[in-house]
Image 1 (cartoon, rainbow, N blue to C red):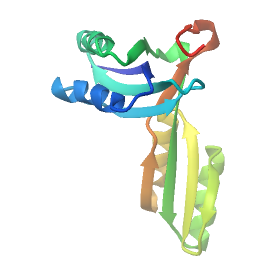
Image 2 (cartoon, rainbow, N blue to C red; image 1 turned 30 degrees about the vertical axis):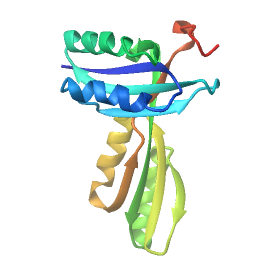
Image 3 (cartoon, rainbow, N blue to C red; image 1 turned 180 degrees about the vertical axis):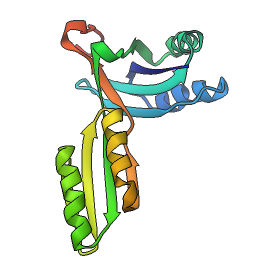
Length: 167
């Protein structure tokens, strides 16, 4: 099983997210993360789908997705040819001393402190999945009240640019 990230250019119409997610569920495939956002052209959205599977399963998923009417193009984002990022917001319970320790950890990861309360602190961090996971591991010693992760989003690097319907 390998980790794969697919970037789909889709028509920005109602129900497209449901049809893409439905394709995965009908075939028993799991989505590790899914992000969707409008492109610079409001007629289109870009979906980033992270999943696990062997080469045959991933190839089958791509073929099935291309059969959907709303899907314009699919691109597999390979590690050395693309940039993938994730955003995490973490709210921690802490006293004054812990707050200083948490700020020190955040500084090492170049995270931003986005909210400070009397007994809490909220941190924002953007990076690749390994960076986010390492950051979260260091926070295991603290009381985490809430966490939200956006899931992966990404694009191919300039040298590997694909011309598609966005232009």
